[in-house]
Image 1 (cartoon, rainbow, N blue to C red):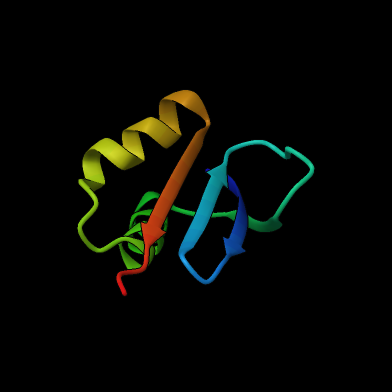
Image 2: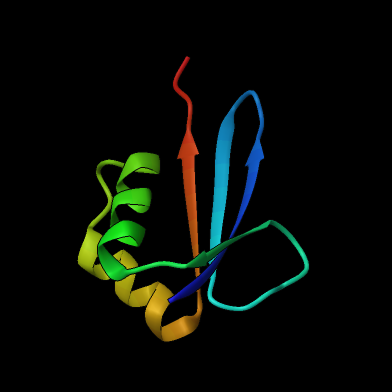
Length: 71
């Protein structure tokens, strides 16, 4: 699957968006296999329901991941 990744890091949160198409933001990661993509998702959000998250990316073409930092 061809993937682009956008990342926005703020003091309170990290927002990462994976896209299957170029949306004009983020960096091109290339044509990646499913397992590599799943591993990247889990590195960002270890508690993600990986089958559901990957399915969302595959079906809708976009997966936003929001990680909030606790004080």
